[in-house]
Image 1 (tube, rainbow, N blue to C red):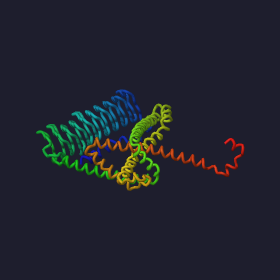
Image 2 (cartoon, helix red, strand yellow; image 1 turned 180 degrees about the horizontal axis):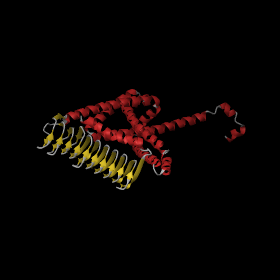
Image 3 (cartoon, rainbow, N blue to C red; image 1 turned 90 degrees about the horizontal axis):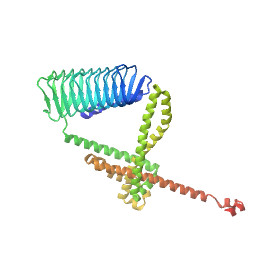
Image 4 (cartoon, one colour; image 1 turned 30 degrees about the vertical axis):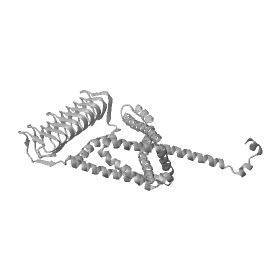
Length: 442
């Protein structure tokens, strides 16, 4: 039950961001960025507001949606439509006529939200002055609701939950420490999810007009068993996927796979060192890809805003680099994944002793044996995550390094063969056709 609602809540939070990515270049928008963004009480923005900075303060009126990302956000004015916020701390004392979606470490609401509220964070507090026009979906560590919630069905998940407000509908609560205060009013059913029925404190004076229902949460042992089963299923699925992938690359790139296995077995330390160096380059290219992508978004916004020339320059500079860095990032990920397969081939070869006879005859059998040794690591990572995860990373680095060394060695071999073929290509008849003066020179 808890997992299902977690995914639902994450979907609610991610959906606005997806919508933002689709509409970020819309012409009817205003972008404000800087260390401190302040929309004063004298400002009236007739479009959507995109605000990014260290601190965002909205004291005026936004006649549209407000999308803000900052360390600290203060909404003291009016937002006519909805608000989407990501911050370390969010404080709403004004009015948001639409819905609010928030991901913040600390959220304090003492204003009015016209529609629904979806929030995730460490601490969420709805003060006595707060009013939510529809349902609330909250997930956090410390949650306190003292205001009015008009929705017909709300849900709260957390460790410590304190209800002291007025709910005009059903309420579902899941937590370890649940308190229904004396000022609480629930005009509907109260359903709470705990491991024991007595893990709730309903104070004298609290009003619950509907039924109070308890549903048992599975014990931690059962949850661990379920998680272990899930981890085993995922590990088997990944192993099967690696097997299919290994068969494909063995058919298409057999010389490179064989040479990579040779490099891994004969130059293991160098393979690890090469893999570490490659991982640094890959991380840098991945960060560069994200950085360039951010500039492309900024350029798109600038074109639709007040600085179209600046946006064009940014896109001209960042645009060509985006597919290049993206390709390098994707190629790096494929190389690391292929590295696991190469280690599987090498381990299988060592176990079956084929590597000692002729590694060029390596087959799918070696891959199956090797993956049977690697796949259990994914299951063990659930039990001893740190040690096994480090070992799994070492396998990826060594395999990726061996692939790079193998490709380099194969290219050298192909170049050497091509040079020999060009040397042999001059036949005796062609030598006779060479003028005598040129022969003497030769």
